Image 1 (spheres, rainbow, N blue to C red):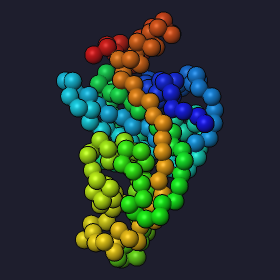
Image 2: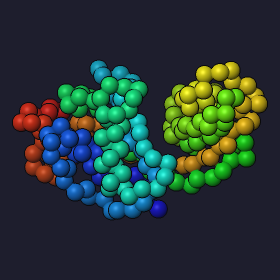
Image 3: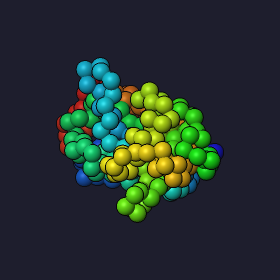
Length: 211
């Protein structure tokens, strides 16, 4: 099984910096494979709690190299919940890569463990609209939610704004999964690049400090 690792995060940072420089990122230092994956960007300001800046991925298996390249940019620049990440934000960013594993069909909407499982819900709402959404395993745990609170939040994330009833929850088809993840702050990335490539990352000639 492929585990999320440091080189995958390095490649996501490389890809974003290459985008700002209108260049191609250097080939990554991890092996090719096929897995579902997510890329999450968070922003750390003044030593506070990291705040989400973008999180997009795929629940279908994809080529890891193309997948991390595509979703590093998509999550940074095209998550509709947030404005695109600007180059000046880079020193405050941390990146998490997730590789999803162990997909299982749950018996019902409560058949999963907070902190262990990510969840995908699929349901048809009262207007016959098919809806779906997912939370990675760390989200309900970080929010301190119960399983029902997580499900209700996910129903809203799926775009349903009507009343949430027990009958609606019981109509949910829930798939649970697990993940491995690796997180790295920009300062650690910059130190890694300087140590392995001999020079700190730059954007269009402007050096980015280790803030």
